[in-house]
Length: 174
Image (cartoon, rainbow, N blue to C red; front, side, top):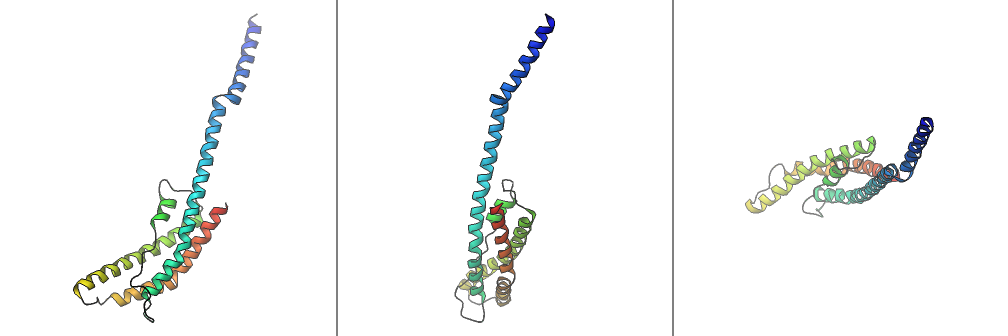
């Protein structure tokens, strides 16, 4: 009698385990994990779409900065405009950012380093412009600053933008 109770108990435990696994807590946990993975994948997809749209605007911003600093022709714009950096920092490098490959991280880092450097100079030009409106004379370092921005916008930034665009498009496919 003790042996049959033991066998019945073991069978009951095994059946309970399989029922719980199939229909209970384990199944619920698996469903919750799957749901979170789907939400994460959808969030990543949306962020990559937004980053791609931002990257697509970079060539126009870069052209604007070239035409605003070209000393060989009449300027089409009064001042260059800053390159966007926050969307890339937030999407890739923040605590809540998405995971991307090493190549994308490197391309984003290369772009951000150059964009930050040029943004400092662009901000200086904007400040000089505003102060020269108020006080009159042009600062002596304006021409070299404009030339540097023009040169970088013509040579360095197109390569960095293209590399970043290629990486973002690759991330969208994976």
